[in-house]
Length: 336
Ligand code: GLU
Image (cartoon, rainbow, N blue to C red; front, side):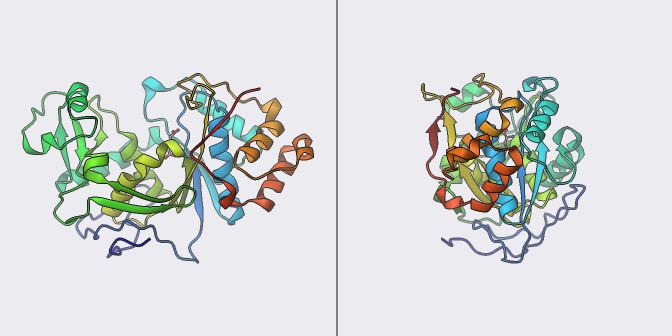
């Protein structure tokens, strides 16, 4: 599907240090990811260190690793340690040891978002200078009174800047994005997606009221800085993809290609997550975990592979990797 006009500038305007440059020549809204056949594949896994890896996050790590390596790409790891109150001390290291213990070796150095505050602030400064973000002091109650989608209220009122306030990104009705509320994209796994940025997303918080940089800011700034071309991640993030694509376009960066893998859900319908105290996967079960991950991803690993070494299982996974065999938005998973 090709809805959008093509970006005037398909040039990545972000240097490796993350300094965002020149928002002046804003591209027209490019909502269709484009990568050329010759462009390299750079994928990533971006866990938040709020707890150890559980089966659901292993599936995401495995899918993003195999998809990158099957395309002779790089696979980067970025630690999204942006929200200290929700982090568990030591979890970042536990996650990295667990990846290693499953044979999932990343390329280059791990990027830590806690060390990237200057890049986030530079981006915010540029956005502020170009009237792309605005202060907002609306409360959670205000937001729920709006039905959960922010209606742009603070675009039109003045906010006392001496009091705590958030910064929000304008997602629609912007000077040079006329009539671009509709965002369409093709997801490699979930297929055609359409979202209205005004009615389904609403202006997004980029810096929180408590002063922390928001995930929506950091994830895009860092995906650009790392030159990420393909993002394979959990299906819970499908709904925030359109707004992230908008943001890539606004920053004049090439759009990555997305694929959202099914979530592992428990019998009670809850997704496996650190918040739901999903059981940590153990390195001693690495072969079994990988085998079950391949099975979860629809790859039909042969039963006798379950007893092989992690390297053998990953080699099998790479050899037989078929992205089109991954189906569905969620699958039942039990620890037993
Ligand atoms: N850090 C996010 C998480 O653990 C993932 C972000 C992303 O893949 O874009 O859910």
